[in-house]
Length: 416
Image 1 (spheres, rainbow, N blue to C red):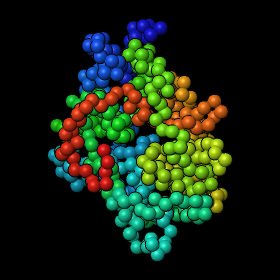
Image 2: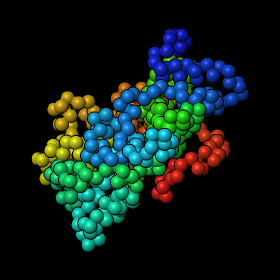
Image 3: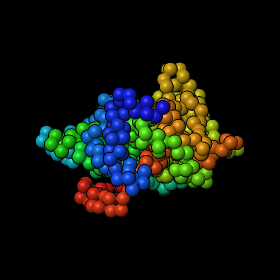
């Protein structure tokens, strides 16, 4: 059956990449381990071979765009981030001068969180909160835990008031550039290898990587973790993939995160607590848990836009708790007949599932994480796209060398 699949013509551009790996696999030194062979194959393929991102993922946002418009653009195109073009850059500028960074929902969340900070002697409303937000500083408010008693800060009309405010409409994207992770961002050249790209998306925790054309000084492609998972799904049936993909999650050391390490939010806590935890713990999503311990849903970082693009849906709630947020958004999606992972129940798997099964499920459902449960439905861990990619390749000793040195000026609070 595997042989028949490999004899068919490639089903997609992603499958063509898989065929390249297949051809390279056959000429690798026989003494190499399967993992070493995969490393060698991916090192031989330039990132220029990666299929172009869909047109909606190539969206760029101008630096003088308001936060309100930026949120609308990101939400309409169903993307989590976009490069920010400096409107004052000359036409002949290099890419490092043309772009001021990548604006993410996470960065805008920082701004939102500070707007939700209630006035107090320790948090004066003189603009210092916004200043801290635009400098990328995680404030004491972000670090503290918000309990049910703090829900008043997220009353049903809070975000409707916020999104109609002049501050939200007039603050420009460049005004919060201090919250960007990169200055402007870490980018690959078209000659860099697949191995470099895969390591950056896994071990170095990047969710997306721009590929730049040095001659044009512009971004040629943006490769995301999701795009890599889709590529792997399209490689199902190829011999190299089946050899790796038929391994169980436990055989590959997944999940990497134990139940005690799972970041979660209780259903009666303010929904902002979920986003604060994601920001503080640097995770893309967390489960919503009943006080009894049962998981009732999942909130991801991309869901923040529902607070800003549809603030009117919370009118009937005294406070926007995590549970109320899930209920309101699900009702909104059903009413507008929009597809979203939020409409599904918790997506789970078991340790004896294969990595292939997991990849196909993540790709078909367009989700970024899946929770591992035992036979009784108890949480045993979580597996993310990054975890899967990290099990495909490994970083050879000294591989990056001085790759990160002098590539770009990094803010002091940035991380690789």
